[in-house]
Each structure stands twice: as C-alpha cells, then as structure tokens.
Image (cartoon, rainbow, N blue to C red):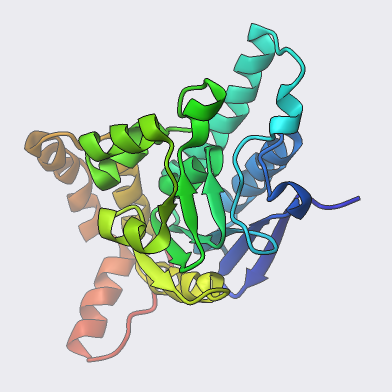
Length: 258
C-alpha cells in the first residue's frame, strides 16, 4: 500500500512529501489525517529545526479529492473533514519551526491554500496556482481567505478567488504569492537551502516570531505589547548570549534552543 505522506530526515531538516501521484497528491481524508499526524510528530521533535513541504512526481497538490465528493456528505461529516484540514493549517502556521513550500506543477484549490499557509514559498517555473473553489461551488478553505490577502492584498485576492484563474509562477512572484523561483525540477533543492538558512537561527526566537503572526499582529500596539511580553525573556536565553559572544568573536553562533 502506498504511503500517502513521506518524511525524509536530512540533518535537522525534514522533507514532507504528499505522495499520491495518481491524483496529483489530492487531499483525501486519509492523506489529511496522515499529514496531520506527521506534522504533529515533527512539531514535537526537537531534532527537527525546519520543514520542506512538497508533492511527489511533478505536482504539489491538486486540492481536494474530487472523486470523494460524488457521494453526499452530511453536515457532521463535512465539519469533521474541516476539523482535520484546520489541524493541518494550525500545525503549519503555529509550530515553532520554519515551513517552506516547494511547488512544482499544480497547487490548486486546497493545495493552493496549503502553499499559502507556509512561511515561504519556492516555486519552479512550471508551477501553477489556482483558487479553483468557485468552479465547484465552494468557499476557499484551509485559511486561504486570510492567507492570500496577507500576501497579495485584499483586492487582488478577491479577484483571484472569484475568477478562479490560473496564475503562472512568474506572475505569482510579481504578485507576492511566491517568494523565490527555481528552474523546473529544482524547487525542493532550493527550498532545502532556504529552510537550512532559516533553521540556522535561534529556535526560541523563531518560534516566538511565528507565534506572533499566528496570534495576530494587526496594529502597532499589538507588536509593542508582544515585544514587552517576550523580548525581556529572550534577553535571558543562552542562545542570545551565544549570539552576542559569536558576534564579538567574529564566528558563527551555535544555537541550542535554550
């Protein structure tokens, strides 16, 4: 039986691969459950300092599994599926580790949502993004109504969600939904490099930065209050002292998350 989600460990990085190529890695209920399980394990794994999220065999994720939508789903069944999907979204956005999406081929529907909730997006020149929900009479889900405007602005996000048009990788870069472009077939390699750069920073500070935006920084006072609650505590960490010592000694710091 095919393992629907693969996890590969490379030093302090974990490569998480959606692995159902026959559906272009569509998010079936079983795949979502397994993805949530794998991400929860990585969240709790202190040896993991960064995550690359990608899809197998040339596509990131085609969205929801349309073949599973033909049967009528009762309201409780539909809500239960959304709970699992939301668990995945919260794990990616709230875990104290950088998550970089590596997109080849299609990131459609919920696959688009999955890419947009990552901290950074590396897309190959083959990548195509589409909020296809309008075509199947559904709302954008997995947080897209919030994450996409954060990247491209409200007016542009509404247009993309309402028209359900395909956005090629280079336009995605111009709009801000993509952070870096790579050559075809190279998105994962570039994402590994970026994730390694991010993972080299102090883990506690990285976790607190992600937590701030997961909680919400909506005005200046929100940022100032969060600083007041957390910056003085960071002054006391051994990682901060190590960073100061490394700067004065003209060497790279070695962070231990303490």
